[in-house]
Amino acid sequence: MSFLAAGETAAVTTKARIFRSRLLGREDYLRFLECGTVGEIASLLARTEGYGDYFRDRSPESMHRGKVEWIITFLPLLEALPFHHYLRGTREALLRFWEERFDADMIKKVLRIIATGRGNRELLKRRAEFIPMTLVDGERLVAAATYRDVLAALDGSPVRRSLEEPLRRLERGDGNLFRIKIVLDNFFFTRFLETAARLPAAERRGVFRIFGTRADLINMYWIYRARRFFSMSPEEAMGVTLSVRHKLNFETLSSFAFAPDVPAMIGLFKATPYGAAFAGLGGGRVAVDEMRLEHNLYRILWRAAAKCFATGEMGVHMVLAYLTLKELEVKDLFSIIEDVRYQYDKGTIRRFFINPVEEASQETERSEAEWLSSR
Image (cartoon, rainbow, N blue to C red):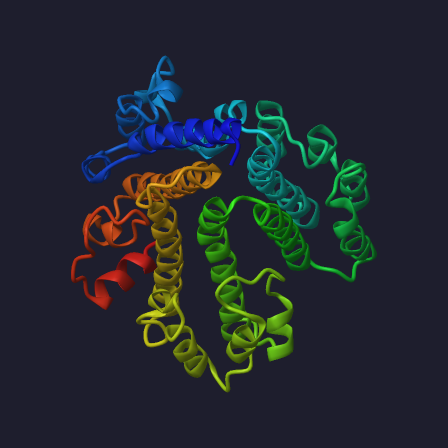
């Protein structure tokens, strides 16, 4: 590693560690749960180091749910921006590709509005104006009234070729949005991890620890859902997986998809490095299973990102580890806001935090089911 590259990685690692120290801790989470209103949550956020700059001078105590969620939704993107000043070449490209995943989410949202006629274009317009998009022309995308308009908004974009045929099929009425999601996810993970493969060994391992894990979890999750809920054939279930592999190769994924039934498939899942995500599934209510599985998958990703900070290594993977933890913290905040607003049981809520702020207490299946059935 050159002297300049060493300085680059040392600078971003130091900044990532400083930012990580501002993440919410156990006491913060518990204080949020004691709030009676969303305004109280916003007021507490305004007094934290990690969120204060975004809430001060906004009268947080009078904020409603939509305003608070609008602010925290974009925090991971906003906090990525300062790191660009320290990075060059492959490392800077990797951070930019990470940000483009949010552009891909915008494409999905606009397509859903076109398909269903439901959605908030004004909110999407504000987002496109607030943080410029690089994967697509944001102004043209938000204004798109047809699938052809979306394709036009992608002119000059590296993702256009991948989406051209699926969008033309949608225009003809013989496609579906699920296929678009698969194409976009494949585009992101393939380009992202192919770029990460050019990094020095330690940084490469760190990036794959997080995003290779993420790809594996997505593949397992979609095979599970394809077989359990959508009655897809094994071949169809394999068709919804990403082309990216990490610890789970094609043969392993095929063994999941071709399992004789769902219980057998879950048994195979449990024998993988990610088996803890599927503990307790299949024997209770579907709603409980789904909530537990989503929580467990995110918890595995949280641990993968947190592990980067325990290695003492330096590099761009430390930035991506922090941003992953921030994304997951924002998801926890969304849950807290919803749960405080509707006054759900606090003991059960704590079981579904992604951040392992405390060991899960021994709640019964019945209490979980009662809470989930009220949502």
